[in-house]
Image (cartoon, rainbow, N blue to C red):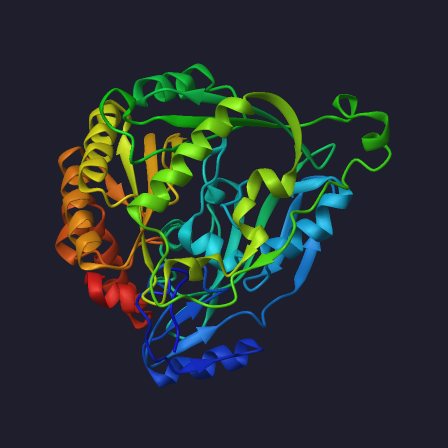
Length: 438
């Protein structure tokens, strides 16, 4: 039984674990298939009941250029291993999602974005080339200058153009492992959006939102800004080991309870406490890279807290001109429903990258809800609000959207499907692609 990180849906899958390109080529003859990394996509994007290909044995780092920061790896290498290997040498991922337990192949397929998208773009902006196994069994070398169309469709293509085997991408040079963090509470949605715009020069920005606050407090938030600290900003003790920062204490959720403890009352209590804490800790301080980028990684199996039925992620992007109205509509619908999201995150996005990648210039809101009939109904209402404001949805987070919803929100889908049909890439199928008619 396999699932994505949301533990919904769960499906019986026939799983293969290849070790060589020859093993991969042999699997093509079993029928349609999908590659799978570390299973951190939230829904069914890396499930194929007849032929799921676990790529984690392709886990070698192959080459590194100290001059340019270019790293060449196989697709199954974990971001966590890249950080542990290269941060002590003064290099850090140029773009990172909210967990370090993703594979390089998964980062390419989802074209992950981070807290710095408004300045630096998504992961695809730092990819130099990819090697992709096609349905014909041939591994093609793809870059902006060679097989450029396949290269572009693969970045954000959710593994539906072929099996990503290797990739070359650039890391960022840093002087320390510390982040200079600044925290600013915001009393409502207008305030936090103004803060995002006023701090557009910040390298990293992200806001937690109290999605149960309503009325004059709608959009009550805590904005966090960050910069890579320089050696001169550290204390003498910290400068003696500038890449050694405190690691978060590892906790574990040992099992999924029969029912989720995340009710409206518990979420409201948490949000109130978090808001008060954000007021108390406002200002600037140094924090370690792990705490800044990956706070949830400190809790192993945190997805179990939602109960045995799992949870659904909802992430949309709204264009800049419609973001204020769209966000207001989304937050108002959630607050009035009483079905609060435990994790609600707002980020400013810069211009999009590539023909099928998720981001558009504007704002992205990410939410999660325990699986229940009420929450499924709520998410249908949220879908409509996003579509009405010209927004789109992130397939790496989706587990229940309809094909009609996807096509109503993203006019690029028709071109993506046509490309897959013309190139034979329709041999690569996930449960998600089958559900969405891709």
